[in-house]
Amino acid sequence: MAGDKTYSFTTLGCRLNQAESDSMAEQLSGRGLRPAADGTLPDIVVVNTCTVTREATKASRMALRRAVKKNPGARVVAIGCYAESDPDEIAAIEGVDVILGNDHKDGLADALVARPPTAPLLQIGGLRAPAETVTAAPRVRANLKVQTGCDEWCAFCIIPMTRGPLRSLEEDGLVDEARRRVESGSREVVLTGVHLGKYGYDHGGDERDLVRLLRRLLEIEDLERIRLSSILSAHLTDEVIDLIATEQRICRYLHVPLQSGHGEVLAAMNRPYRIADYVERVELAARRIDGLALATDIIVGFPTETEEHFEATLEVVRRIGFSKLHVFRYSPRAKTAAADMPDAVHPDVKKDRSKRLIALGNEIRRRFLDAHLDRELEVLVEDERVVDGASVCSGQTSDFVRVWFEAESLLGKTVTVVGHEVRADGIRGGTLVHA
Image (cartoon, rainbow, N blue to C red; front, side, top):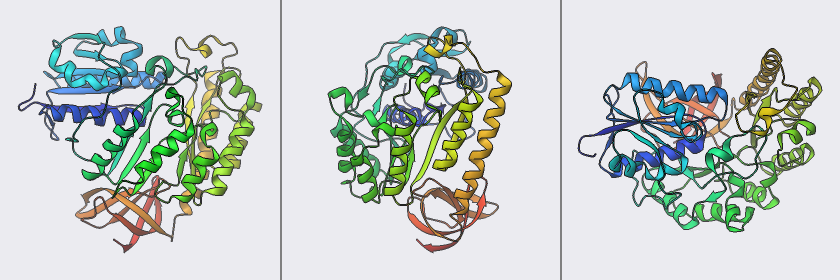
């Protein structure tokens, strides 16, 4: 399979999927394959799919068909949540050669070596230790998968079926992998998982396991930042909050899914928190953690959601002042509890509520970005390219704002830039204060 063979990845969905794509790329590189150069046709195309919403499923199907069409002669691999939930649907797409579920990602290279060009859903292993070496191109901001699976069974969510039960990766292996990534050039590590706050729960632990892992990662030399991808409010314990508040290298950004601002809807969704508890936890975090930005996910049009329920969601969004909203219109997923619920909200109502919520989110987002102007911003440079003859660097602040500025030879460095103007969904920097 190696020699002059090349590969490419298309990744849909969550940051955990991206972390797994990075790991699979390392597997292939470890077998001697190379990433396909721009403008060349790869020998292997891996589409890491998503099915969390109806739109995500549609996007995954389109990505697979596009991969087949654009890469004649390539071996096309479908993997991930859509491949887990609907392998027969994917098998009907002509040109898809291999179909693998989520727990088979650690065996991707083995599967491509051992199986014939066309294969069914393969049953290959579960979670295993990370690779011994990092051979793919290093990222300044690297994703570190620490757990997968979920045991909450929210009424709208198919993830417990596609990802399975809670499973945490072994702590020593995670620390070793993070250290290897830093030695390869990464300066920020993003902890990813389906249910990050329950890291260690499957071994009888609690939030102290996540805190212990964070403390061990902070001991790694040259690791400048740690970012949490997403965490439920119930797992923002005093100990978790206090660690973030006192350790500047843990990013001032928390993504805390809300889904609805009304208790009746949360109960119908089978969410594991009450609205009063959610607000109490995130407001406590905002008070204790200086400069904290809060982002969230919200579903509009869930069955039984009334205008009163939706207005309550708007009020919570105003009260918290989320730096970024991810708004989803509810779409039923087969085999979930909500799929059979009565009182479906009309599509036009969903569309209207989505527009109103997005407009409010954009208004709050603009104020949040404006607050970064005429201030010194610490930016970890993740990208550098030539634009209109000038070298332009870009990177993220600790509170997850993209900043662009003119400079060169700064990749992987943390620099100080003065925010000049809001641009698109980020900040155009002016004076480079310190590099």
